[in-house]
Image (cartoon, rainbow, N blue to C red; front, side, top):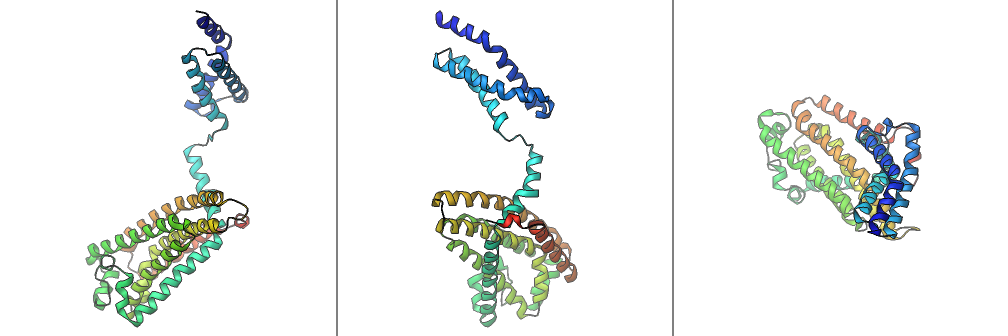
Length: 331
């Protein structure tokens, strides 16, 4: 009986502030914080501290569990309002695309250069090997990805895959296979970066080898320029996504190998957060590349327009990531 009376007296003395806090939180959650006045916004932290004090007393004096549960829930709501992010989804997306993603990419500019060089090295190596000996082609391009586009194909067939809509089914299979291949390379290049950069570097070289081998086949039939236009209308975006994913993986591996003044776990955690921001953007780039691959490349058959689209995307991404001052590059 004494316990019940004590609980009722405790509730009666303090319940008014709890109810006020609950009312303000309800309004903020239903109608956004801007629905509160300045005085009400200033009152919430004070009411939150009062609720915490009440919760502490309730626990210490073993008041009824229902009251403790109520105060715990109320305090948790107030905590997230006072200390949590109150930005809307639209505001968070705007912040990500306007600042977070390009800033994270800027900070990886050294790794981005290394990643691009590894990709180019694989492309050049495979191009030279397949040009000298076509038997190397099968080592770099699977039969599924090739879809008949191999050293044994006729020039007419290779040309038809670049321009002829009559081969749309085969073109779709090849395009889907190539996109899936690059998307997998991008994800694995980032995920395997923790192994001191080695798997990431190998994947970048291997991805370049696939491109170089195919280019060698088309170039041997006098279709090198045409193939380049066909691939780069979407490849600028897709390959840049792979390069950025590789750069994020290289940053993680380098941070683990050379953590500086941090522990390896702390260094990996910091690099991982930065890399995760880049990878969220990489997913967007792969989606855009998929649209270009599925529509623009199929509908545009002019080499000039294809190269124009490729150049426009290259300039667009460069300006987006590296425009303005380079203060975000400093480590």
